[in-house]
Image (tube, rainbow, N blue to C red; front, top):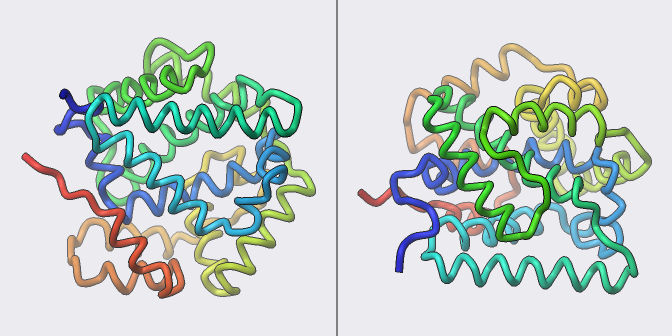
Length: 255
């Protein structure tokens, strides 16, 4: 059975690296909190009740698509669709198509931003590869009106950023949950990561102020390649009880 994602795809390089995955979700946590459809997160309360635990469960779903064969990935996509349909049935409403696109779009964008921050900018071929993989994921989730190419997606991504984000009382509630679960100083580290990872509109709505020294230190960590630093850096980002979950994020590239 063919792989759902080619083994040489840049998507595997990104989503098999625990550092990069943590950066993706640091950025996503900011944008989730601002989305006009964020009230759906509060309907089940799963993310507000356990934002870090839900991060890891979401990554497990993503990796159960990226690192498996076509049939297994389709099964995972069907489970995701069934879970969303169950929530919609319970609430008696439909999750808007634009909200599905927002989530898919931010995963694409922060995948690229995380790789650029710790490694290097993606090439044009890698950008197209990244988008094509997520386009297939979106099609498997029956997300409507997906752009045909990376270039078209960049235009639509900006439109979504301008139209679909707003600071609300849900935003404040989610950020308070982040602070409670991370503790004061890890929460401040999260804010700095978000200040450097997120688009300008997100930074403006959240009033995030990036510190140049923080970005320099993060880039140095990404460039130096000293693997022994990983446990220290990941301890700085997350409490020690999540270490086993972080280790399970690793999917080394197989030639």
